[in-house]
Amino acid sequence: MKDSVLAKRLKTGIRAIPDFPKEGILFRDITPLLQDPRLFRAAVRGFAGLAEGRIDHIVSIESRGFILGAALAYALGAGFIPVRKEGKLPHKKLSMSYELEYNTSVVEIHADAVRKGEKVVIVDDVLATGGTARAAVDLLGRLGADIVGIWFLIELDGLKGRRRLAGHPVRSLVTFA
Picture (cartoon, helix red, strand yellow):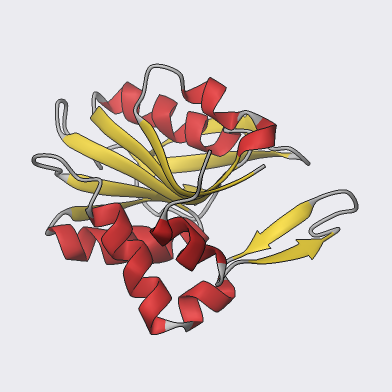
């Protein structure tokens, strides 16, 4: 697949860190992209360009997803809903455990975060194996949300995480093999 002009531009702000957080993992660090106001703005505009129709909430996953999701929610005039690591939300919540490519974890959402039928987009920084995004999809399904998109800054195509999100419209601004 040929990179778009936007993807080529965004890739200039993404560095590869080998063996982080553990040996054998190639971590894609978006810190340089976030530090560059033009690239950060281009990423948010790239996401905003994916929007079709009304979106009630942007749902983002801790922690880098919060940065992108909050900026996008602001740009679209939508609400922002955090999906957090276990034990971080103070109110009644729903929990979901999932597997990452290098460990297991639990994420939570407030039980009153979304009303049935509200249109939401899930936004996160990286689609790897799809475990975290799948957990967010399942939590939102339990709340009755209408998931109109699942958007990632980066997709690691070789890990086939998109398969775990089958049946949902998945989009990525940048893809790495």
